[in-house]
Amino acid sequence: MGNLRWIAMVVVAGCATTAIETVPESDWQTVPGAERAMLDNAHATELAKAQAELRVAIALADHARAAVAAQPARHKLDVSADDAHERADALARIDAAAAARARVDLVWRERRVDVAREQLELLATQRELDRAHAVDRYLVGDDYPVALYRGQLAQAQVRWYAATERADAAHADLERAMADVSSAKEAFAQLVRGDAEALAAAERALRLPGWSTEPTETGHRRGLVFVSASAPLALHQRGLHRAAIAPLLR
Image 1 (cartoon, rainbow, N blue to C red):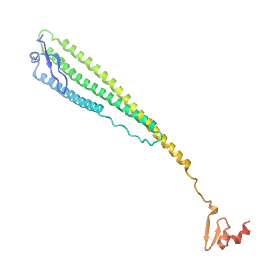
Image 2: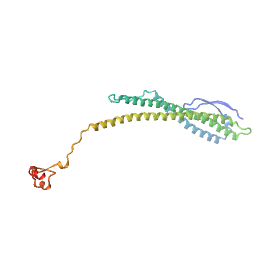
Image 3: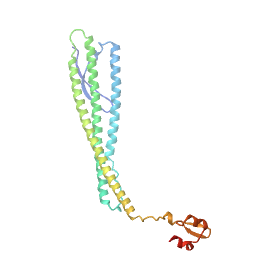
Image 4: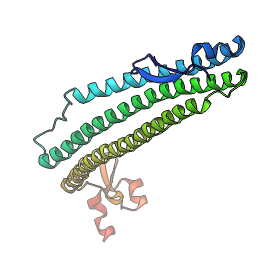
């Protein structure tokens, strides 16, 4: 049935040392070399991808942690505004929502690190199950204890699914936090727009009425004589003085 033993497998890229039950090397050597190489190369490819994902997740978590630890910049306010108190409250809500979003983002990033680490352990247990299946195919006599390796893979899957669910829940919290920031910003924008509209209305109310000249009152100069535009055309042509033709206009 093979000499089973416990060994410590060290997974790189920041994952903690995890002890899993592995297929003994003596049993693994019963599998032809070409098949062993194919299985090992496939596993190495998947492992490299998972390690890269873990490194990215750790870097993003560190960045989010630094963002939370940094002193956030507060919005400055023009205290001369008539509604300075309302604006100050609106800006404070924006700052509070942004700080909450940063904290929730950190939680989500940390959950993603947990998922990446569980993925590495999942791959490690999957490799041992694949090896056990391969040994079982070439084993002469008793069946190889494949169920043992299948059981530890199932346990790793349970832990991976649980970590994924926690990450999904944290991401849902992040989306709500982002919505809160957007809502706080929109409330402040509406306050500023309301002030602008009120100012525009006040300016319109204070605007003086415009001056206009009726076309019939527009004068035309004909030489040295001024003739009203309302006078008959014939009088314009003759250039008669307004006083001279006043009786004709009665």
